[in-house]
Image 1 (cartoon, rainbow, N blue to C red):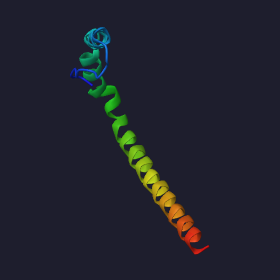
Image 2 (image 1 turned 90 degrees about the vertical axis):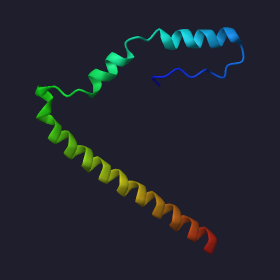
Image 3 (image 1 turned 120 degrees about the vertical axis):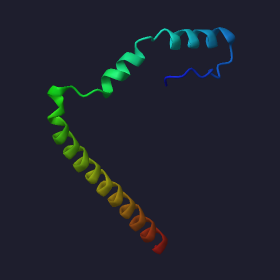
Image 4 (image 1 turned 180 degrees about the horizontal axis):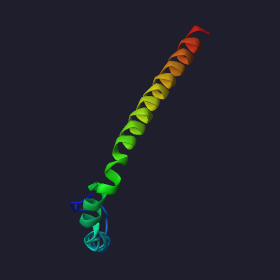
Length: 81
């Protein structure tokens, strides 16, 4: 949420407070830039991170498939009864 979008609040004073709060966070761009930078020290760990990310993504996909299969089996059993 880097760009301000007018809120749908009913009272104008609340809209003003919302905008004021949004604009008061001047550090967000700096924090975002730092978050996307990978230091030389951490560059070596990127390979390990990528591998564990891939493993986690594969495991998540398997869990989602298992949930769908369980739901389908339950539905078929329910219809059969």
